[in-house]
Amino acid sequence: MEQPEIKFCSPEMEQTGLFWAPVQEEDQGLDGLLGDLQFGLASGTACDLQMENYRARDDDALFVLQLLEDADLDEWLSGGLHQSPVGDTLSHHQMLGRKSGRRGMRKRRISPWGTLVFEGKYITRKNNSRWTAKEVKLLVQGVSKFGVGRWSELKKKYFKTSIRTSVNLKDKWRNLLRAYQENVQKYTLLDLEPPLVEQIRKLAAKHPYPKRRHS
DNA sequence: GTAGGGTTAATG
DNA sequence: CATTAACCCTAC
Image (cartoon, rainbow, N blue to C red):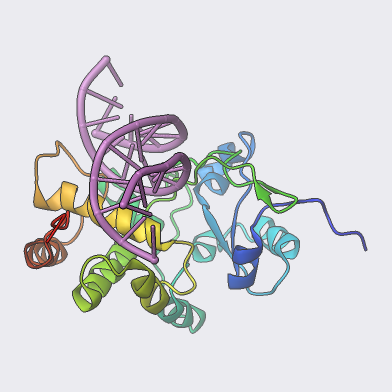
């Protein structure tokens, strides 16, 4: 069989089993489901195969959304998790608590052009994939362990299979400080649990960021 | 590899 | 239209 020239996941994602859903405008209409799927979870290996599965399993689409961390993945595979990570970003849009909330779960849109990989090169400009509360929690955990500034180590330890790069982690931490430490924002897009926010503040105090520039 | 300013898609 | 946050650029 011929290998397709256009793929919807990077080699890296293919390896980790995560890929981006090539959402088209038309697809986004149907119950808002496809548009919500920023990630697909590959239980097999080939991306294209996964795309088929993905399209076919409408009802389980939310489960397909489970992603990223090994621990969570394992838990999910054993049937432990039931809440979509999307719920984290949607919780303040009255979508909370809908176990299989297909309808109305749609809120975010990913750029249809944002994920295309052509002959190994990204045509993408940006992914704009939202961080889930879970990921943030993991990041905070990592920072408490490594402190601020050892992002690649943190990546290896806590985000090994995640699409988040060490730079992403660094940027996210900066955003967290802006959102919860300085507290001058008018609103946040993702409301975290107060304890987690508190932890962020403590860590921020413990590890001043931006770092002091010179001796 | 990291810090920090810059860019812009998504959102209020 | 204003702001947030994810991602980019690049000096060091």
